[in-house]
Amino acid sequence: MREVESYPFMFLATARHVAEKLEGKDFALRANKKDGTLAIIEGHADQKWWYHPTERRYVDAAVTIFFPPNLRDLAIFWIDIGLFVDSQTVAACNLGVGDEVFLAGLFTEVTETTRNIPIVRTGNLAMMPGEKIPFKDGRLIDAYLVESRSVGGLSGSPVFIRQTVMMQGVKPGVKINSPHHVAPYDLSVTMSGLGQIFFLGSMIGHWDAPTGFHLPEHEAVNMGVSPVVPAHKIQEIITQPELQEVMREMMNKIQKEKHSNAKEDFAGSSKQPQSVFTKEDFDAALKKVTRKVTPKN
Image (cartoon, rainbow, N blue to C red; front, side, top):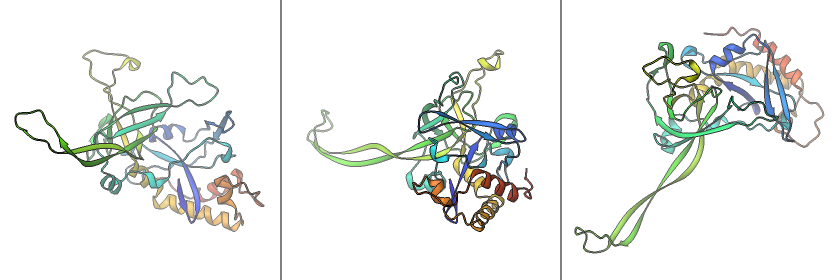
């Protein structure tokens, strides 16, 4: 989620290769509702997708402005942009190899259910290359590598990392049964604890392990290491000047229509609004301000 002049904008994020397949087509999303039922959210062929402004081919991520009807009824939790991992977060929180990661997504073998039931996989951060690395079809990409086996249906899924907090102390008078230690002495003790969770990035896919013989695609052996689009690359998509200008123009149109309660309604206020900014209003404003934008490759 990103705020522009106090108005919260939400984005639907997915993998670039998924968004490119959706462009020009009507599509639908399933979302759970707070009352336990299921909601179908419609996406339309003219939906505007945004890609990385300078590295579209090398950043497998895309976003679109997200304003579903009856948002307050949906069991949706957004990731605030303040939780995105960047170089400052890495340094300040000492994030690095070995830290625990979690990713949530779709398990394609269990989809015929009355509600969305996500699969959550765990692993650890395996590599922070610090430079572009080769991936499929010769692309060089910026990516973190996580030790967590990816499966079909996880492309674009969010990946979270848990900070490891190190605590040091002294345990006095520890007796060591060793010929080198003839008397008790103070022992330095280091313990690790669980810290804050951050948004590391979005899942791309995986590498197939070489087997020495041909296997059908659905039987390919997964190497168990998956690349992740860094969160700061997704942030660069959201904060690109063209998209920020669209958001500002939309905000101006909202204000001109005197929808002063837009933020309250978006946040799920219990107050009865006098003039609700509807999804139809939002879609109309979005079409007006994006019609003149020429997409960049």
